[in-house]
Length: 53
Ligand SMILES: [Zn+2]
Image (tube, rainbow, N blue to C red; front, side, top):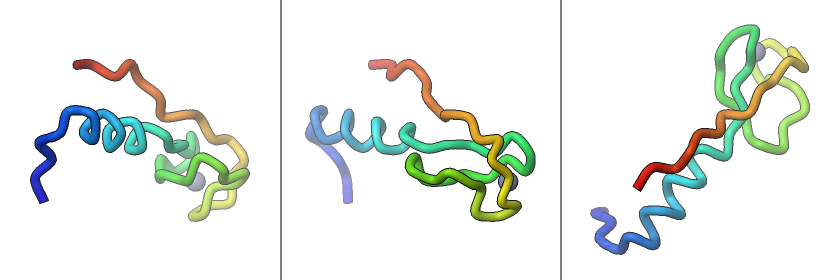
């Protein structure tokens, strides 16, 4: 499904960035996750970048 609406694109990109990355195994986890779902490490960092236009 192509996203022609720039507003929807922004939302989609935003949600892609709203993730956490495990520092131990590098897997992506939900933002609300307290522990890594793969290795159960609590060492999660935010995957947050500047949203470029
Ligand atoms: Zn992990």
